[in-house]
Image 1: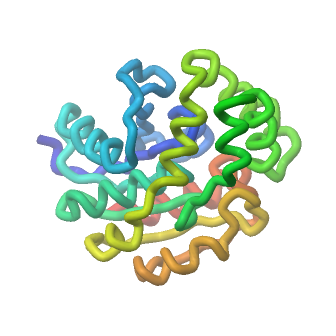
Image 2: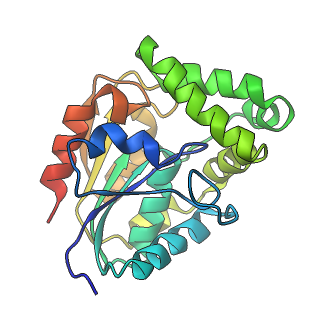
Length: 230
């Protein structure tokens, strides 16, 4: 087994590992995973944050990785948290990017995701970025994921909305924790992470960015991750 602790990157709802490319360019030793049903991973999508957390460790076992620094964005941050809580002896660090708890999704958006996903995608895209030139890139990524599985958006948003175990998970986390938040994030504004940050005794970084922090504040995010490695 590989006893080093790589930085493992987990993407958010209706995204895939490619959202981490800007960071990977500065942190090439990191490992970005496609979650089941996303990107190049053709396994069936999983129906809970807990199941996805277990999948992360199973996937790392398959790659002979014993320990890891777990990094997640948005939905991926909840998966990283749950994974760190489920196998705390294997998590050497936890970084939650663009996170909140509870990660509530409005009933109107949940209904829109099921009934009119194209409109839901446009709304999410608008709320996910603060830099206009990121728009087409992020929207096209979500559209590709949606074209492959039209039910994936509603599933992922439901997972975010339904996850209620963050504070219980936080009590089991043993590793150092950092939160990277966007000052102008309209999806997971910093105030929505205060309870979680306190429970995790986390170091909090608030950057001048929206929700798409990996693309909007790449250098700073990459530097924080470099400093997080054991």
